[in-house]
Length: 229
View 1 (cartoon, helix red, strand yellow):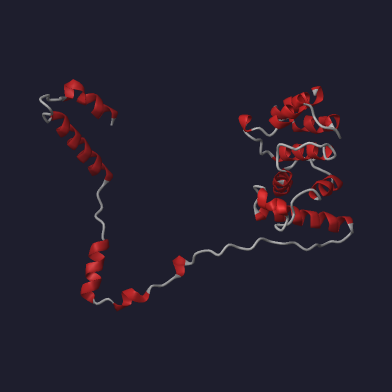
View 2: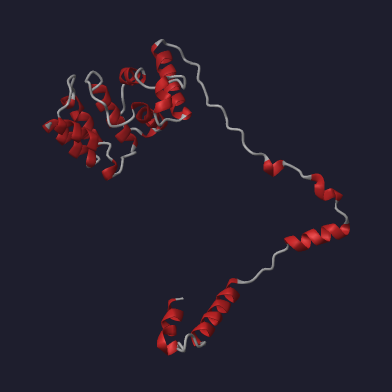
């Protein structure tokens, strides 16, 4: 518990290099105590805002790797963290970067196919799943000495083409009908200063008008209202 507590302090201080140096000291293959579980949960707690720094994802993955054999339910999504790590791989520091063996070991535990039953219950997107799947394919190809590998891209959403659609009904309008339509669509421009002045005049008139037997005045409180405008 003391090593995990020290690791948590370094993580909250965003000393990611120190966290990586302490990761091996929290390795475990047994269940965690209640105190240790609470410390681990605080690394990904909403109470102090989840850290989305590229090195923070790497640190959480390092912890996932050393606790892979422990009967522990991690407080973060392994697939989600791996997807963030892959997406920000270019910004991860050399000290915190995972080795290819560590990545492959974790990717084999991730959701890498939308047909996986875990995908329906996890809060994951197709994009995140395919990021992990393509990264695993890349690492496997590199380990086999191949320079290329197959990748899968998500299906592009069908976008609305309203901006290029043409409604030819207006071409059938005669001059009178077109003139009427344009008259209905026209807007009168009123300068903002005019609107503000009209509002002030209306408010002043309301303040000076008698209401329920009393006659509010500028000196009686209306001046403060106008001043706040």
